[in-house]
Image (cartoon, rainbow, N blue to C red; front, side, top):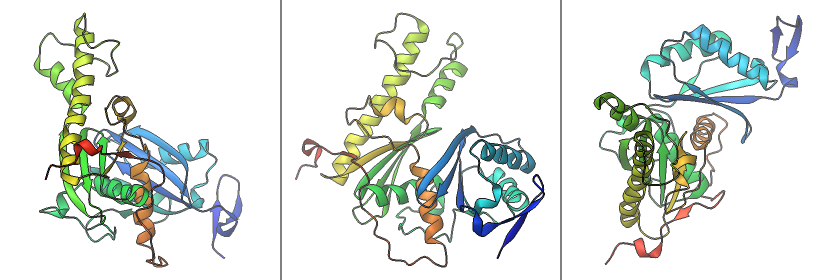
Length: 301
């Protein structure tokens, strides 16, 4: 029977007596999202600012502090799955996992079984978070499907009816657009990104907020129009990412928001890479409704 020593309470804790969990970490350029899964249930989650200056010890202490708020013991973690688009942090997170959780983290990368064929010219160019999104979206909503991820960039990922990753679209995110206005125009200030009260701004800040918000909405709707036209009737669409709730509801497609889609994908990929995996998965079952292409958007023949 495996046992661990808890120095804080000076007694032996048997791992078999604990509820076992999976820690998943999605490291983005702007935010790092962490989640704890108990089976398929997301028990706790946190969204943090990605800090390239943190050490492995700082990451370890921060994560253990967050665990304490949810009454989770580090000994309950039996696996760590990481998707990272910030390579300089990978070594630190690997060190953190070994030092604070006594295990080797699994990184989503070349050689990881995902169950999703990637039809990209160079599959290694696809961000790990986009692959995780694709795995979860096809598992939960079926295909064909479009994932709109509102992160540092606004990305659109196209999944075929068979669950293949077809490719996608990458466009500037809201934060990038706002910072570009501030940096390149001497008299334009930094502004909060929010839905304006009216489309016609009557001062500089309101005008910038209107442009940023409705510019993003127009970008999303315009690209979705074209993607729906290619993928055809019955295509579903779902939004995720930190700013998804702000923009998705204003889209003419009324995109449903699945805030933890990437974390779900990491859990599924972790499970598919375990020796005990049966290989008898049944992907493509919709967990909840997703936006569908209207018949009028179908390609003309």
